[in-house]
Structures are given as structure tokens and as C-alpha cells.
Length: 149
Ligand SMILES: Nc1ncnc2c1ncn2[C@@H]1O[C@H](COP(=O)(O)OP(=O)(O)O)[C@@H](O)[C@H]1O
Ligand SMILES: [Mg+2]
Image: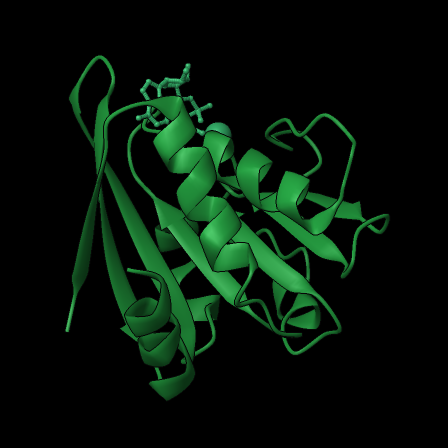
């Protein structure tokens, strides 16, 4: 089953991310897809703030992965938008770790993603409205969607 959430402003997206953060577990993998400006990084900011991370979160475009260790749990934030074919940054090493992985543009590395994960697809409706479609893969993520949405 898919789940849909309509965000009418930045604050809605931040709040949603906080609610998902409250259901976090070690090894959680969130895969964010959607056009530039659809709110993926806003979501990561809300999640990180809720974890207690005070750093300013920006898309790690040139480093691919940023690791934030100052929150309740490690956060591995990736943006694979500019990844080139065959480039291997060892993404698998970040799964099943002690923290949460959030991957922007995850569909670009689809064959490397774990089977159990939560896909969140962002769509721009108008200037301030975003539709988020949640596609859980695995029971744990199905339960998470039921709890939060
Ligand atoms: N409902 C909304 N949710 C998230 N961002 C929104 C929303 N409405 C407008 N925005 C704006 O859209 C932009 C989203 O940017 P960003 O999160 O960096 O996108 P992405 O990482 O998907 O490229 C921000 O400028 C933000 O202010
Ligand atoms: Mg981004």
C-alpha cells in the first residue's frame, strides 16, 4: 500500500520529517526522490533537527555523503545527483549501520539500495504545495507509515 501526504508549506514538511524521526531505528534507510526544489533537503533538515543535530544541513553534492554524529543517532545524508556511472562510494557500507541513512536522488542508484527501505517521492504541485508519496518496502516500514501517516 502507498501513503500520500500533502504538504502546504515548509513547516508541514519539517513536521512530517520530525514525526518520522520519532519512529527511527538503527539501520533505517529513507530514499528521497523528486525534482530539484521539491523539498528533499527540507525534509532532511527537519529530520536532523529532531535528532538533535544542530549543524546547518545542506545537500552534500560534492562529497556525496555527510556524516552527522552529534545527534541521538548517527545520520548519514547522501545526495547522489551528480554521481557518475560506475562511481562506487561504498554506499552499502552505510546500510545496516548504527544510524539512519537518508539518500537524495536514490533512484539513481536503485540497484544498490537495500530491499527493506522507505521510498518517499516528492512532487511539486505549486509554489508552496508538495505531494509526498510513501512507498514502504518491508514490514517495518509499512508499520512506520501506518504509525505516522
Ligand atoms: N511545502 C513545502 N515543502 C518543502 N519545501 C517547500 C515547500 N513549499 C515551498 N518550498 C520551498 O521549496 C524549496 C525546496 O528546496 P530543497 O529542499 O532544497 O529541494 P530539493 O532538495 O528537493 O532539491 C525550498 O526553497 C523551500 O522553501
Ligand atoms: Mg537537495
